[in-house]
Image (cartoon, rainbow, N blue to C red; front, top):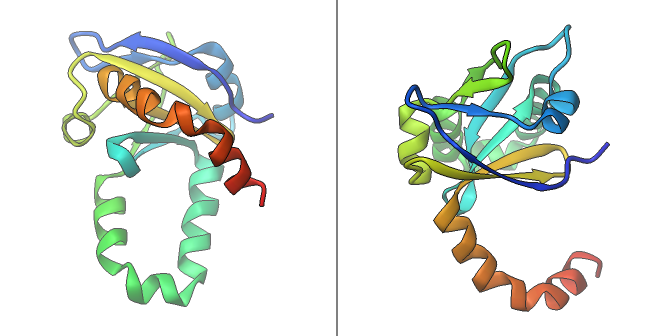
Length: 145
């Protein structure tokens, strides 16, 4: 099932974030309880299941053009990515370096984006929505042309 929806959350004092049950159900399994949190574009973070993260890594590894052009991207991406595992209450701890990258203080928005979850600082997400929502029709045309 594609991941969908928008959820507002707050980090607790220990930098833990409660994941919505619908996201946990799709991303976590008994065989693969670990998740991967990684930097993304627009100063967001992405949360992947282990399987999706591994498929993404294989896709990057198999493209020789990516290896040559994007060596610095690969260094930055993988050095900042972090394996996390939800605790018994469905919370993950977000590392300080990733919070800093995304400009997150306390209030966040979690977005279901097909095969992964995006984590945004709430104010940054609201700004993104204001900027890009008026272009929705054009974006749909671009996506399906």
